[in-house]
Image (cartoon, helix red, strand yellow):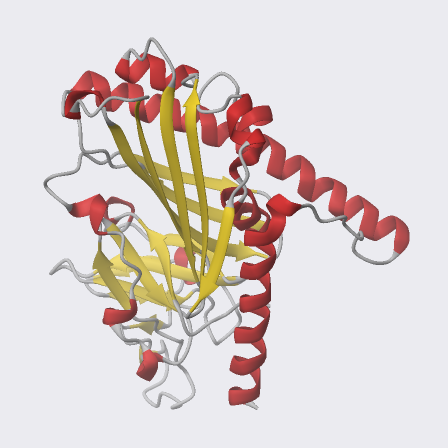
Length: 341
């Protein structure tokens, strides 16, 4: 169901500390904590003795003690102690997952550890670039991750879902150009000479029509960068350019739940009040998406239960980016499964 030999965002650095944290990643329960030297650890969150979640146990030094029968495991997943006996069976261990801290996020590799190359982590450098001012957060959305990918690759929904923030009629009425090569999907939209959406007016005080660019890049399995740039029509005034990125790390939690790690770094107006306005506007827009996606997931499940199969959808032109991404994921899944076989 999920591609495993890829990097996914697991957490923000501040979420992982000396308290035990459980988070489902690719339908697997994972335990996170930091060693005393600050190194983050990720272990399968089920004791091999009787499947008690280790996250319900205790952290003793750098080892985790199961809260049921007291077995202890180190950061490599090896069992180091079984109360009442000296011999430790070699199979008594839990999986340990590679972690890398980069771009203000903690990335996890759920597949073959020997294939975990940090150089393959997606390029989200804007989130950690001194020339860009970041803000961001995480949503836990009760929907399949591919619904969120579809949502972000087809921004025509902004017209109808986000009319009070980032959407207006011009978005849905402007056709896009969709490209795909080297496993990436790009959706490009150029809106010229149209009114600015409400959030843009609040941020830049646009009084007339603007030219607006939306360039979206999807890289497998779930990472999306939206490049947004707007300016008054016919103007080259650098002080009136509104440019930002929407960085989306989409991590499947289960088949029907998703972690959405997002950031919206910008390269203008470093003032804190602008950051707050940008953050609040982003949260409002994403919250509107969450409401739609969870209703969509609930209806899909209802239709599947009613008819014994997933619903059959009608595709329109704006769906091309999402369809290409789904096709590439399917191809990669088949390749990964064949390799394991």
